[in-house]
Image (cartoon, rainbow, N blue to C red; front, side, top):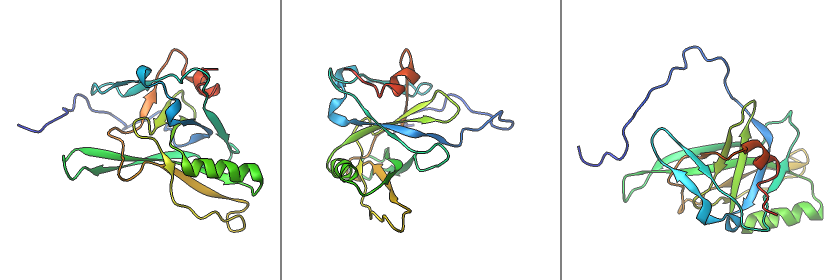
Length: 190
């Protein structure tokens, strides 16, 4: 059979789950896409493994965005579409977050997020799983309306893949010798 690029090699059984991960910790690390040391990105597309490891260039760090843990504004999703030219799958990664306030520092961060390209790491609550969004082509701020009054002091925003530059894989799971320490240090290489 021509055109088959992947074969299913296992199933799964969720008939009696012990627990279900249903939330992200309300913090994410935003990394300038150009700060990833591309020579150390290791993407393994073996059908039984879906992880990535990376390091940042010397002197670079990611930046934490932290919201109240009782909220739910930080979470990631992805949409699968089909490439019309190749017929292969492609994915639009989305990372939701909230921006609060009207001060000068908040506006400066928004302006930067509007003009840059980013990789985002988010940790699934109750686990050591750290998902990486946008590792191939980066994420940008989606169109938005900032509504201080209607948004109770801020607005929910979305960093997402560009429609003309989707990812070729679903978000990867981050792997290293100590994933949590890397996340907690914002992947810093300073």
